[in-house]
Image (tube, rainbow, N blue to C red; front, side, top):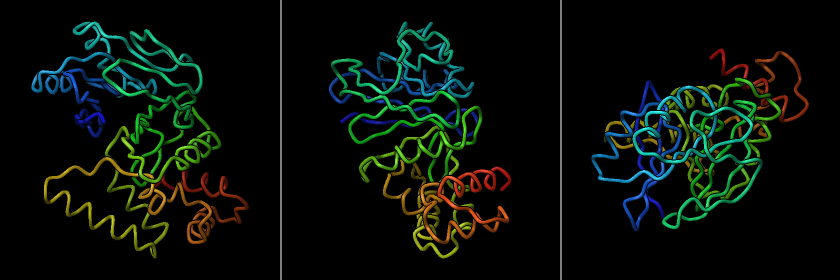
Length: 256
């Protein structure tokens, strides 16, 4: 199984490095800044072989040109949006073999945060950009609430042990919102306390898992009574289905 390294970048971004376990090869996911990636690769004496991109926002692509110019590596991404230096494009869900030193990757279409957004699934690890966050989800910045709701449902059906590697560290604020929505959810309270412990110990908060998100992420719990009631109070109206609940939660979180 590949080894994953988090490279903090910009204000709160994660750039993920997927290291081969039987070679010095490494894949780079969503490099919004080249310099921390170059520093991490050089420190570990690694050889980058490709860049994997999830969507077109600047904080996920701005380091691509410098990295391609330095390492002469291909850039993978969706064929429906412009990505700098992109050389290999995907159209819809598919499976790909990037390199003999890495397992097969599955490409998932998960629009909503943007109209065109993809994720990379390898073994039990999902690199999902800004669609799903720990205890939250992406804003609607080009996509629709229906798209994002459907994408989150798709992700939530992955095995519970699937590890989620998202594009930003928003966990603390997301959990504050989650507890506002579900003040009686003991799992959210436990998660908040665990994060405080991890931070005091200097340990990373990410990745998260599907099972943890299903228990504590309000955007994946739109059929739960407490979440429905909270979303209705915010909306000031009865909400007849989970999509309506989700839409209300997303607007609420934008103002939170």
